[in-house]
Amino acid sequence: GCNSPALPKRCGFTTPLTTLLAERYERRSTVISTNLVFSEWDQIFKNLVTTMAAVDRVVHHSVILDLAGVESYRVKEAAEKKGEERALASKASS
Image (cartoon, rainbow, N blue to C red; front, top):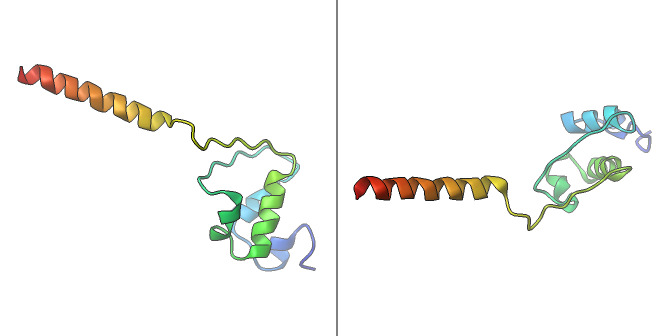
C-alpha cells in the first residue's frame, strides 16, 4: 500500500529525486545542497506525503550543516575581483 517504504513508486509520486533517495537510503552517502529549508520542500515534490517521506529519509542518519549567515566565498571573491579591477582601472587612467 501507500504506507510502505516504497511509497513514491507505488503511489505514483515518483520524481527523479525521490527515486534517488529511495535507491540510496541506508546504502550510500548522499550530499544535498539547497537554499530551501525543509518546510519549503513541498515546492520540490508533488504532494505533502511525498515531501514528508523524502525529508524523513534525508534526515535519518544525517549530519545537517546549516550555513545560514556564513559569508559566501563566491560573493567574497567577486567583491575582491571587482576591487582589483577598479584599482587597475584607476592606475590606467592616472
